[in-house]
Length: 178
Image (cartoon, rainbow, N blue to C red; front, side):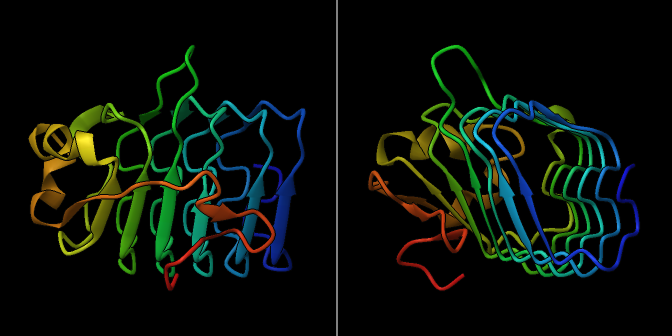
């Protein structure tokens, strides 16, 4: 909980070489609006970024294999997230209520052809079922049938992910208003 409730932080860059973000590390950093995660992060701890009220968008790097319980819960300004396409040796999993009560969430981009495991099946509690879930076209039916993901049944959309579907400079998904 190194930066817990630090209201002076507005931007955080987790550099390459860091492999884990501990529990509560940035919990309640209410002015944090920009987050860039290095390509070596494999674990995001429980409540690591919960209650970061001004965070609007998150790009999870491919190196992440586990997103902890409530890791991004109650990030009320969060509008879009990109969940990684796991490398051949990893499978991304989301802890209980990992993105719960992110009330502004309108877009989830999940490049994995297999739906990531959602422990407890409630990773998106409090998120509107109107949120769009963008997945690879051949995976739409898998997501629609998988516990936790089927919440977005009517808004699961096949999306051909371009090689550079997100812009690292702005930490935004290209081509979408997020």
